[in-house]
Length: 541
Image (cartoon, rainbow, N blue to C red; front, side):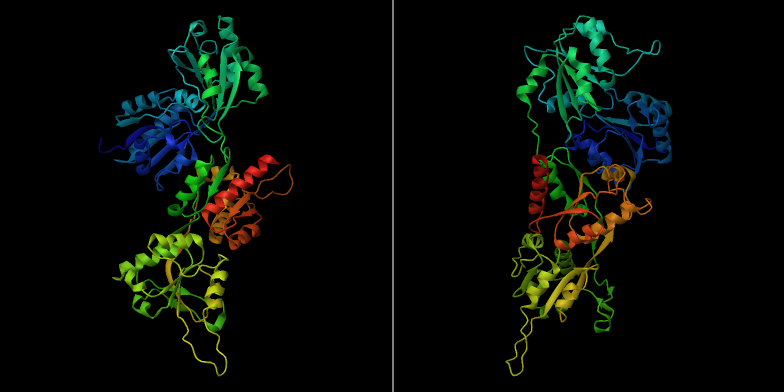
């Protein structure tokens, strides 16, 4: 229908964002509207088109945020509001496995709305697999049966299950969404002849960093749920295959399992550290606080000096015709490196312009970025800060004394962004500065991301601007009391932990009340190592 949007019923899988299908990701990246449930991982929501309208219809146990009938109508409404648009209905697991996707599809058919179904990996088989439990196994179970554990009959309000038939099944029984009713289910199965010693496992938050497996038997199911505080979302699996989980459990308890970490780096820089933290078991919420843009030539930035009349307001921009007069190029960030080389090529020049010049880097991360362009650094300070770089370069300048032989003073070029402070210029008053990129703060957070951030264990900061903008965004609408500051027993707020690269970043975080942990070196490897050490020490304490 040319005057209607196209709806995609997408299965998000059981929780691990790596289990989302490639087709599902492709649609989410193009979607105009995303209608999602509560069990969808924040990491998957982060894959959605940044411009998409995000609609939370999440359902909580015993409380439906939006009724299913309303969701059905909502999909039709969006299809009408977005002619030829893409409407993604994102559901946990698979849309057609107790996901009520069939009901939504029927509503779309009645309204004449075209739709596709993009299946997801159902928790019924994937969650046991992550716990080392095969749902079928030769000689133990030749069939498996997936059962809803919460659908009740309208006539008497009891679970609408054929307990006599289920009790006679020799295959594996898998109950979805049934924790609240499992004591009753277990008792009815035993009443109908099911062996009370039947092995049973509860698997909470399967495939996520918070996964937990609790073993029991049919006769101890109810008391185990209470004693171990088993909560939804969880599945229950019954049968002889459960015992294989003792031997086949392959998902290890990684150093950062159960930790949610917010990474505030710019989107194009976040993937590296996010992948490392995820591999160590953490749930990572990528929440860029700043974005950068390489300035077009000849964009000019008005830079007001902090030193008053000595260096008045001036226009500073790249002038590659003047590059031949430069002796030392000083890079203060990876953004500066990328932007400089983009501008160099855009201006009709190339890397040969750097022949014979010395190259300085503020630290190892920037040094590594320069190596990607085939550039080895001549100068890297031991103190990986602007002050450390400034002092190192200042030492290259000969100090004139009366009657001494005159030596040429090297001309130093600083490649910086529009928010750079005066530290380097104060130490190098005769240096030239080019503003090669601008830093743009993120101005708003979608509600789903704000909620995910508020529940995080720690925040990762790599710059002072990220700290400042994070505090600004998270303080909006809270009467000046940032929600990331956690209160305990009504006492004063206790700052959330932050992991910082560099002393300036740490200082900015401390100013806003964070408890800070700083990396030993200004590298992502060092920061990741420090995060692991911090949580490992906490577990030993």
